[in-house]
Length: 155
Image (cartoon, rainbow, N blue to C red):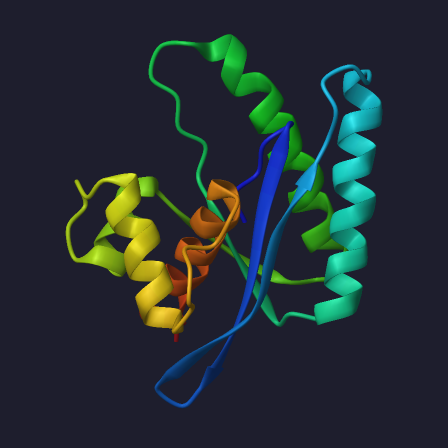
């Protein structure tokens, strides 16, 4: 997942042994003219529909990152909150990854550019074109990062 108030990217992959298969991707879009609570409800309800449709066993989400503008980070945090709530309702394990960790897992370099990540997502998943919109490509990158990151269970 790559949550945002205007566009929340999502992607679904399936692990089959060592292979990672692309299932679907897209984004949930909201209109800026709508009040924020309505926009958040749209994200929440459409995301719940996606969870019902694809029935994932776990989720990966990009951590919230902002440099200077806290004001622009607040709507993203709210979108992240409603997505996290929908995942919690289904009892799914949620793995969180920094943008740098996602870049490292997909490209092999934490400082990779957005275009490099998108192209490698395309190649790894065997897609003809780079996934659009950008938020969907970022969500698939988070899914690939999760697939490449071992899960350590405390004994």
